[in-house]
Image (cartoon, rainbow, N blue to C red; front, side, top):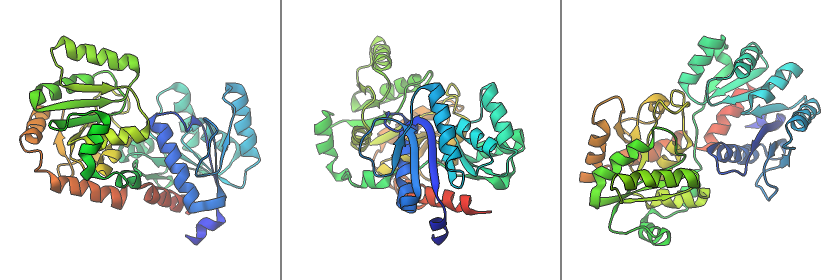
Length: 362
């Protein structure tokens, strides 16, 4: 868009872009796409390891006090530019300095200070918001009297090209590389381990029995060892559990699967407003998803694009698993629908374009 040529955007965050966390992945991909669309008119200030990046990056200090002074200095010296951030403290500095800012918000404010900052920010006409789900936008409008015209909904996204580069027909080669048995049905979950989630992994192992293997990728070494002990205590052995790996290797595990598993429980603090990165990564694989439609996930997952279950309905998960295990090749229509939706609605290119259009609106 020609109007983008008149705009300079700085992404300012205290977060690292080199950790393995989902937030770091998302910030990296957003910066890459901002750079693709704005070219020299984009720069990101963040923490992380110095390396070669496909965008203009400047690293800030990690010392708490110095870091905040540095961010203030950056903002003061770039008052004519639009600031984009996922950091409510950065958006508050912009509010104080009366600068144009766009805050991407992924959860409701939970601490006293974040609630206070949000209340102040929502009064400003110079600060716009990008909510990760419709539920979150509704919460901000209702709780903080946010002008709904100053907020849009932009769900998470995935870099589909990174999955397209992996040939799904080479599944056996991927399994060989990862030392996964070729003749077993594979159900895989990638991502963090949190309280309450692992009990549903046991259901998968019990339903698969000797027909298949459940693979969990993610979590710390300590968390993974605890998970494995729990499985062993129940006499369950049809699993492979590995701690957090690189994004590239995580994609290989995802592509090795016959189905990908998503769960969201009320024990997770982001359950109500969540738009998890892994859902969109799963959709990009063109592999069936066995997905929980409780909480914020129901804005993306439905019966048309995945094998659904609800933790509020007795035996719903067992029935979804049995449905897949008994006829694993019968879900091509759902898989194609999910893949079409990710390409049409949830790429980073489309997400950034939508946000830039929103920012340019007076």
